[in-house]
Image 1: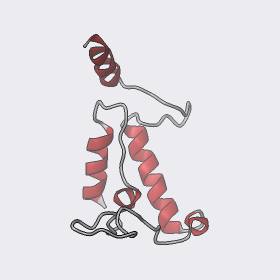
Image 2 (image 1 turned 60 degrees about the vertical axis):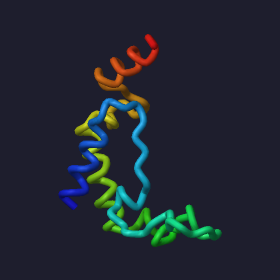
Image 3 (image 1 turned 180 degrees about the horizontal axis):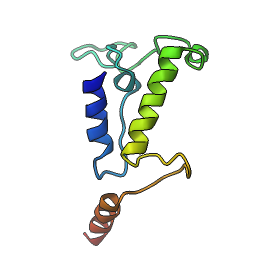
Length: 101
């Protein structure tokens, strides 16, 4: 998943305070949430490919979660020593600039 990891690094390194990425994009799954041109109960809904309980024991899921944590740590979206919201200098600047408007 080298290409996907680079896309995630770019998104996580952005100065935005919030980065929202669908779970299927984080794990490289191909399922879609939206089916353009359709109106049904299944549109804009998503079912995980495996039960949530199995995600904690799946070696593939756990390996990917470690990769995601490493990317988040490298881009300063996550601090393993001090978990919680963090802002990079550019994020602080954006917030200050937005407040000045």
